[in-house]
Length: 197
Image 1: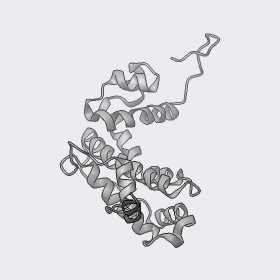
Image 2: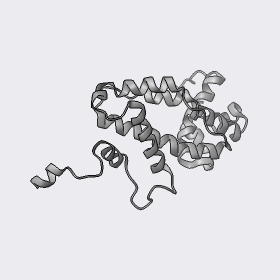
Image 3: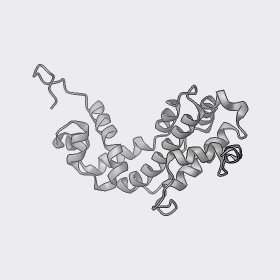
């Protein structure tokens, strides 16, 4: 039970809110540790006693299923896209999208394994997705060779490949900065810079 700075106990949360708080705390742990996450780690991350977890969910399996449901909720993905500011520089937006997609792909494998899920997650509503990515790239749309939808599709492909252990190069993995630079500038040196050197 949490206490306030005056030493009094904080008011108890309704069960729904407590469950949501625990789920929010456990998702990053699952994406990092997979099914090996312990109830102690979960309790510490959520700021509750271990017994609270089991009173809220009954067992660890139910918590894993609730976490998977939240992680794969299409609205969760759309909200993360909505958080990208269209006024950010293009390079920053590309990097944010790559980070978002890589995190989703890496996390998806661990969350699915932890929850014992085999069915693919539901895709976000395509019209809502297209509206959001169009807004993200609105300031640069005249400069883009591809539509915003095609740009984000390319970023998703690169992000997925770089997130898969069997595909990405374990010795020299591509960083988000590497991928952002390649997307924006390609694989060739800037010829003007080379000639002037």
